[in-house]
Length: 394
Ligand code: GLU
Image (tube, rainbow, N blue to C red; front, side):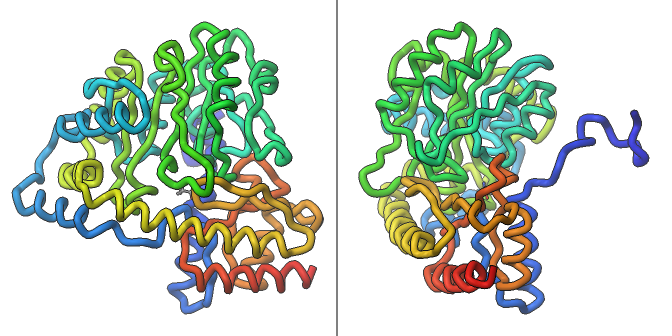
């Protein structure tokens, strides 16, 4: 059936990104002068470190303003490959790396080059809002697997086994996870790996964009580093936005088996061409400068303190529970005792207390809400006080 506006069937059921639209709504309300506490944005409130900004300015001044290679500037592809080898134990060659406009475009490209109608993609819920839409746009089928709060919202090998069919093509694994902050341990990954390797032709895309933001005892492990067999099945998606506070720069990367990366580069050559050339020089600086480690660590420590503050605040509230997030910068809070749906809860919270949060239904779980702690401590404290007042008013 043709829609009244003549739109394609492909977009007929496509909804706007909830994370982006709620953050935009909060910003618009703030611009009108309303005192909104935005706990919705998945965006660090820090500025990009100075040395990274200086590198991009220098690139601009040097005239790095022209088209570049579709796959990314060679120096950046090399630096990414080196980083993946050294930090993550993933022996990718530079040719196996493609630079895209943020992690989001890497995943979109991947869906387009890997998935056919009828293919099934296993998606542990809660999930990041854009995964199912990308899979559906590629014509493939999303197979949701509900993870349990009691297990820290992590996929278990049994759940994975049960979700498999002869059409299973791809598993999406996001660790540290958005929206739950779950971080898979080496043992948990090894247990999943056994199941993955028992299915010929099943790929895993590891979205590791939050890898640098882990707290306490948690360590980030790349699934593909566990064995050479697993490495062959692994596609890695990441970017600079979260660790280096570079959300607006739009620089991400995809690394994987050569035929997949080659196809993704061909696809990108017909869509966005190359990533903004001087932004890539900033990203190169982020990866190669000795100044970066301290800058990232400073932000990570602050996120860690905010996480503790947030967790303490949430856990002191009646009617709310959440597992401890070990990474990223979100808490995924169970609100089922309030009797409200996640949309009702967030709408009323915004209306009554001017606190912006993202309804869990956007992440596939309607009895939870996502709160981001990528904002200053004063806002978090105010947000928690208002949340408390809201819960007491119910
Ligand atoms: N990934 C961030 C979030 O979940 C940024 C917005 C988006 O791209 O979804 O809030």
